[in-house]
Image (tube, rainbow, N blue to C red; front, side):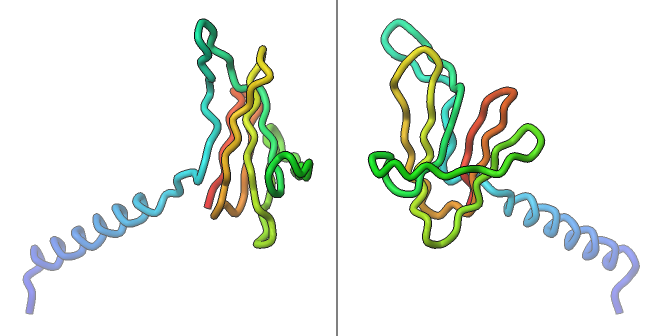
Amino acid sequence: MLSNNKKIAILLTGLLLSIVSINCQAQTPVVSCPSTFPNTHTVYHLYNASLFDGPITDNAELVPEFKKEKSIWKIGSRIDPYLVCEYAGTRHTIVFYAKGATYCEKSKAPVQAKCMP
């Protein structure tokens, strides 16, 4: 039979391992828009993001749901998601293939966009 000290040590170790495994399961984005886009002498700031089904040349922009200060896109298995990041003061965009994402979101203040597994 185990002594009380050993039982407590085993319980605390189990609790610690549970906490560590929960933290390790935190989701990291599949892709996210950089907050700035440097170009020679200027730094442009992210001001908008959109999601497309397929390459942007197909013009299949998806309409998000609006919840509070966020735009949210739920991505079904038939959607081929491309996240487009737009920067103020330039016509340049950054396009990410968000393969494996199940949803994307864009917040307004500050503007941030990411797609999650």
